[in-house]
Length: 93
Image 1 (cartoon, rainbow, N blue to C red):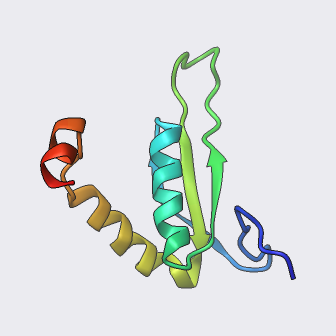
Image 2: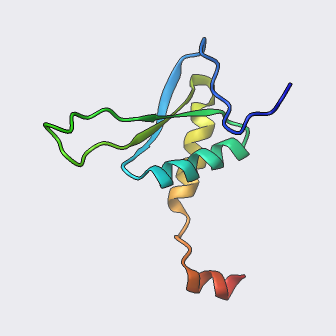
Image 3: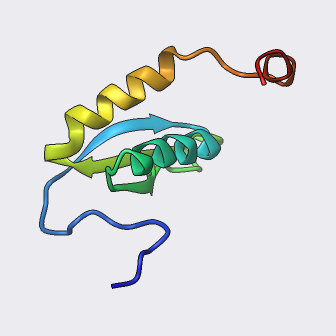
């Protein structure tokens, strides 16, 4: 069975939103954190009418309902970690 880069949740399972952001790169980072923890997630665009709300939108991450608590803990840990900039990376790396 081949391994896929971005496995999708089982379509028969109920999916719940665990994360949303206006920044797709941030959503991809969080999706990578979940994937490294063995949690399969689905990235979806947030549909907002650009005629009524120009510039609004974003993406959300969905996981299987039984993975939601673990995913939320990982996301909370990510949000509490300080951002790493180039200067900090040089000092610690």
